[in-house]
Image 1: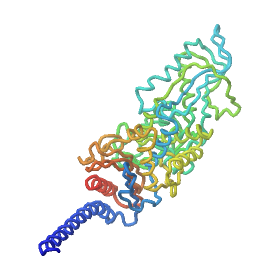
Image 2: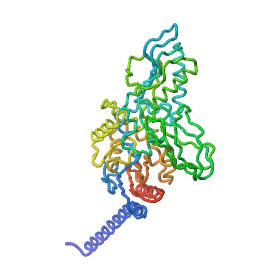
Image 3: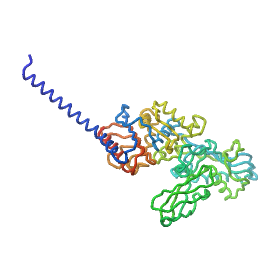
Image 4: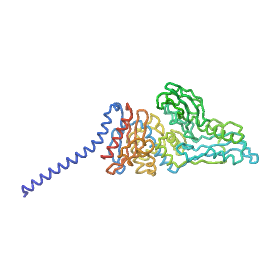
Length: 494
């Protein structure tokens, strides 16, 4: 028989349990509303009135969805698309994969007279980093080394020409869906079977007062000079100058504004035909040491009757390992590197060094990894095309796959810059909460901001995440601040 005391004790326990449950629900609600509040505050900003936002966060341990908002919405990703290309390249080619550029000669060499009846042939192997500013200590004097190797063979006369074989990839260097205003600038440099110096040239200017026409001082390298219609105006202190130039073209025009009162302002343009540029450089260097060459420098593309003969090797340049190239790619967001890797994937797996073949390989890679490709539409490997589209969930699933199932997840993770310290994140996410705690790839173009990567919460959980925002208005600083707050509150409260 229950006593009055037993009944009172039971009632007290029930009341205490209800209070405990209420407090726990209140705590959970507060924690959840912390992140919801950050997103709600961002969405409430007037600059977001017509925007689209997609967010996805997945726990890398149990693969559970931690937070999402329009995660299946297909949006323009900008440069976070490089994570798709770089992850596929690492997994399918391997971190130690290297590109090889070969120099040799065809025909017959009379060692007594030093007369070569044939051609000096430079065969491109698809190296995206040959002579790159990002590897200054790796390719030291490689052109001079080639000339020395030729000289050491005793060649004094070439009854032929210097010719570059750039046939590893197709002759459509720029993806079809890129914007015209991008293709002539350094960040829109095309991909060639033989690329060099980041396929970039410098145009140096002397500028005067506001409204004046900048004076072209020169080109670097000087041999890359081309015909220019200069429509630039000196105005303000920011660089808003554009180069309009088609691949393989001999001329270009410049438009927009560059800063006033500069003694040496540099505008970087894409090289329209890097294989031809290398051929001309080597031809000139050989001439400077007294080697007679009977025919003008050229390329396999220009010489339609050029046949690939057996080449006797003179020298070879081997690229850094792929993992180092991809680290630069994701740290510095190098479009050229991404597009090179895309065509290399097409060449290795489809026997076609084309953008289309490379994209097929990316889709196969994602499908084999169990990624939901719905809403993912690819037009290039770098994200420069505004016709690319991806979902936050799809990209986050790729990040999750690389972290948990990828053979080279460690190398992939290391390729992402640390927040506040490296690459494109050096000036962002400086709050102490992100220190040694956030690695991510950024993406940006007009009215697009995106971030994707990994972070660890204060409770010790690691999350893969993607945040993509399209079609906001006003300054991007507000958007970046909103993204930081979403990530910060996820770190603190998840």
